[in-house]
Structure formats: C-alpha cells, structure tokens
Image (cartoon, rainbow, N blue to C red; front, side, top):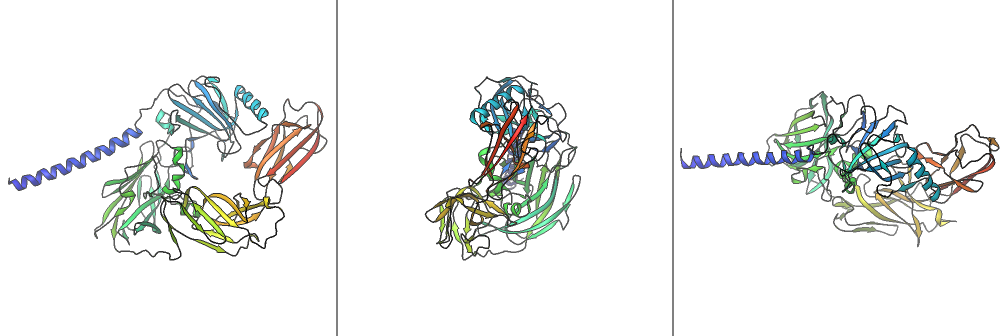
Length: 583
C-alpha cells in the first residue's frame, strides 16, 4: 500500500468518524430533551376515566402553541377533577375569557399542575372566590393564596370540568409546569397514557423561493397521497425548482385513537441528502416566545385560508426553543444540476413515523423584482412611516425580519371620518405593538370625540374594533397587525334582552336570572346588577352573549328592585329595571 493511498484511507476513515460523532451528538441532544427523566409514578390522573384528547401539547393555535392537553369529558360539563398530587393552591383565576375558571396547584417535587375551563370549584375554593368577588364587586377575579393556606391531597376533588372562558366545548385543559420557570412541559412525559395507533398525516408540501437574501411569497404547492404510513407526492417524485435557494414547508396533522380532532405533530424533521437541517419538537413551551408561532408558520396562508404550513425558514428575529438542529436558517442551496433527496419525517409521541421522500433539482435562476414604491424597514431598528394623513411607528424588534414597507391611502366607503389606509400586508406578522395615528377628516362633524374609534377590516370586510383616543386632530391606538384601518364612531348602546324574567314576576322556582347582551361594534366592556341598590354577582359567558345571576342568599324573600346595566368599550350604556318577587 502506497503512502498516498494510506493517507487517503486515513482521511476517508476520519471523515466517517466525524460524521458518526455528529450524528451521535444530534441523537443524544434530541434524546436528552425528550428523555423521560421526569417522574413516572408521582402524578395521578386528574380524571377518573381514560384520556381521549381533543388537543395535543404544543399544537398550533392562534398566536400561540397550545400549552397543555385538552382532555375530552364525554361531551358534558360537571365531570369530577382531582388533584394529581399533594400540594397547595397558588393561584385561582375567574375570567370570561382565556382559561375561564382556572386552578393552579404547586407540588413539592418542583412542578405545578394547572386545570382550566372549569365549570365550578369544590365548596372550599368556591366560597373563597365568592367572598372575593363580593369584596371587589367583580365577576372576574384573580387570587394568589398564601403559600400552604389551601392544601390539597392527591386524589382530592378540587373542581368540576366545564366549558368556561374561550373554550370551544366541554373539556379539561390540563398542564404540568416547571414551578421555577413557569414553562409548561408535555404532560405525556410524566407517564400518562393515551391510546394511539394512527400515523401522522401530511396533506400538502410547499417549496418557497429565497432570492437576494430575502424570502419572497413565491412558491409551488404539491398534494400528498397517504395511506397509513405509506406516503408519496401525487405528482412526480422529482421536483424542478426555479432558484438555487429555497425552503420547504408541510401542512398536516396527527390524530389519537377514539377522536377525530386534528392535532399537532410531536416531532417534525427535515433532511437534505440524509443530513438533518431542521427539527421541531413538542417537549416544552416558553410563554415569552408564543407569538413566534406566526413566524414559524406561513402566516399569510393562515390569515387567508386558516391553513398552517410548518416551514423550515427561521427569520432573523425569531427564536423558538422548540426548534433545534437548524442549519443555514432552514434555507437550502443547490449549486449543481443534480437531483438531491429531501426527506420529511412527522412523528407522534407513540413513535409512529410518516416519511415523505422526494427529489429536487435546480432548473433555473429566478430573479426578484423589488417594489419601487416600498421602503426598507429593518427589524433591528425602530421604523416610522408618516404622511399628511397617517403615522405608523414600528418599535425595534417588532418585525420578524426585514420588510419592504408601504402604505396606501384610499377613498373610504365605510366612514366619513377619515381615509381608508391599507397598511402593508396583513399576511406579515408583528411581534410587538405598534403605534397608529390616523388624521380626522377636517370636514367631519363630530358631537362627541370620545365616541370616535379606529376600526380595522378583516379578510371578509368585517369590522374589528381597535380602540383609540382623540389627540390633536388624530385618533391614536396600538395594534399588532397590518391591514386596513380607518376612523369610525360608536354611539350605539348594547342591547339587553331578558331570557326568563319580566316585571313583577315571581321567581321562587327559578335558580337563575338570565339575559343576553350584545353590542354592534366596540363590545361589552362592563356590566353591573343590583338588588335594592346593592351589588350582586352577575356572571358573564361571552360565547353565548349571556349575563346571569345565580339566585342565592343575597336575594331574600319579598318584592325587590332588580337593575342591570351594561356598557360597551365607548361607554354607551343600556339599563333594564324590574320588580321581582320571591316567596
């Protein structure tokens, strides 16, 4: 063997050793993130029946990743919810929105369990909440009990599952958080079992062009055929692309047994010529990163068609702890005319994998034409656009990447108070709030400037109230969305309709007094009920536009004056008054 041959052999051997250790490092890194170093027998189930999931951990939601498991409660409210371990209550929250009725329990092993969308609490906690509501004269309350003052035992009844807050149906939202960091952790790491024999589904593939160091909205879409784990492109398995730089994205879902809900992947990996260049994994969530989901997905497609394509491109101002093993910001580069293999693996928590393999070949060199009327805005600088009718200020770090910004001011068919301003592209997400100022038309006649507001239009031309106040000829507000904006006015009070009472009615056999309350624009902001001029607890369910009072010890026998008042966000108020009788 010649010395030259020996040297070549050593170099080849060294190359394979290097590849082996790189591959081993990637495997170990992923394993350490997801390995079950969490306690397996410490926590009990929060319910007394098997888990059937309607929502998975870290699945894609509006402006955030889902922070827990949504467990079906057999289509009804009122199922018993139990403490998963010994501990004490650290937080109780009641709200018409978000988690609705929620309970937080800290455990001595360093974790906190969270139970949300509850129907009601056990008697001990319910009494504390009600006393606080009457003290603060507010339905929405948040309580942080003194450490150890409300102790619970493992398996103790703490609440009943429900549909409160921004819930889409009866279920229990269940989380386990690291008590130190407040980061939610995938509850399945703690030994909870969910039946799953279904493979993740990939429905569509996209390849996006990346030209002149910027992502442009230029792509080709390919449908995917899948039966079980067998998956392939419906078209040819070799795709010709028109630019040497590009990145892929995939749209799909996962399912669990006994449920038809379309949930999220546990793990999603992308390989180029068998080398991994991007990985998403649903192990933990960092709340401070929640809006970065809008950079991870194709946000324009989500806004236009409510479809979420998970893409490999990592924009300059995007960081997600769920994204690892990223090379070259998730952008691929082909310098030759050869066919290169691209592989995508979608995995569920049970270890089932769906694998899509195909080939890509560069057949062109597409050029990007910049918009002449646009202005370059940098994500790492503050940026302001202004003309005689509008000012839009974007703080540093509000953009996920550099943008070529523009504004168009148009004739307004919706309002006489200002022009209609089309502010950049509604399909480009914002991370932070921006300051918006719109000039009031000098010919507009306004009786009450406090009733003016800024309104945006969604993709279906529906009005969205954006708030705002009048300052020196302009309406000012904050927003986290680009789109179409103008000045409008709200002078119409909410509408209150009684559901089960009328004046001089005997309500002895009733358990509630109920109303519907709706508003045409700015939305229900405040509400109040009194009995003989004394405040009583009025509850609010915005999903049903329902306000209701659960008749209790605060309504004694006899004839009483019941008054309900409802205000919208522009202080327009409606009032209803009744004489009610209780034996």
